[in-house]
Length: 585
Image (tube, rainbow, N blue to C red):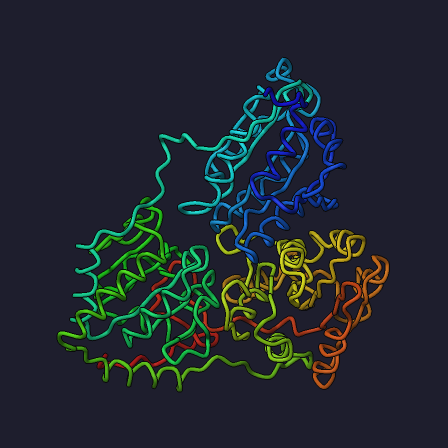
């Protein structure tokens, strides 16, 4: 029996439904308009109309991160598509499974500089895992199936599907392909047993081993298997910015976050290690500091689903390619077998050193000199009052680092931030997407007053679509991280970092009034003694979004800190203060 005739646009909607999409974040325009017509009749696809295409992309990212499903966003050609590029690049850098669908001008107009024409396939080629240009409506089902498969398998990433307007309008038949034919795409195999045996041999012989857990543990849904391995090993572990919550912060073997703003114990452990077992981490510059001085005496076991990451930045002594779950499970099985034969591990001295570092250099903060609230205190209380099941998203800057440092993450997928690209404006739309995907969970967007002003228009989307996120603005009336660098490296010459949003009589804008204008609940907290009550009041409001303006000190800085371009050995716990390292490690 011949399938009934449909338009390419109808085929596109049916394809998204067959691929498993449940929610699409988007904004219509001329070149994608044919697809928006059948979208109105879709029974299994919820569309959420955003106020800016970048918000659609970040919402799809937050949805994907919180749920593990593929996030979907949609936009028109030209500026609609180019507005998605930042969000696409952000998702690709952080290995988020995302499919972005864009409309394109008619096939005959491509290359003529037609109205709202842009070569979005060419523009996004460097920042996508793969992309497609569809000019034949018959290709739509196969292309969508391939896009979802590529986005969600191997190392997840962003895939763009650009569909010409005439392909959307033409008649075709819808047939969902049963199989995939991608001869050039082979996701990572199971790990090689010989490499697994060698890695375990190194672990058993090491005196100062450390597990470096990266975002790949989260993306690979490997927390259970990795915890089994870590528990069995008895070795310490650190979790990168993208891996916060991969294993509980309360775990006794947790040393904290490594890197530029990592804990002294975590940074020191990597520097003094004789073995680093990295799972789903890519040895990026924010973790390693000056690469030639990073972990100088450590052998490296590098396990990753993406073979391109192995030895890219730091040469691996034992490379293991495969899914994080498979690798961790194989390592645990081999380790258990070897320990049953003979347990030669001796980590007592190593743990004595690390325990001393944890006790001597805990995370903390000092009282502010200007009388304003310490932002670290606000964020710490936010985590404690909200509880471990809360999902937190953040923008980028000081508040992002404090959120990673001072909130205890007990579960995976409860910390969502822009790590690789460092995109200001990420927090609010990402929180919106996370809340759509996990409607029964409390979702807090922790944002700076600079970041918040880039995407706060999505509060309108949240109000209209009944998405009750909560927003904590850490309002230091400045671009905080830029100001910190100006403080440390530019002789306190604060060039263009004052935002006039919180201190003194000027509040431009007044965030409480802005929240009210959007139909949100607006709260303000200016005193330490009001922090808990304000957070508790925000937690009680569930019928609409809540925006809390926390007025905090502009002089607070993120410590510890490894300045850019120097060795991790030069970590500073406060301005000009380098900790005394243990000398007999």
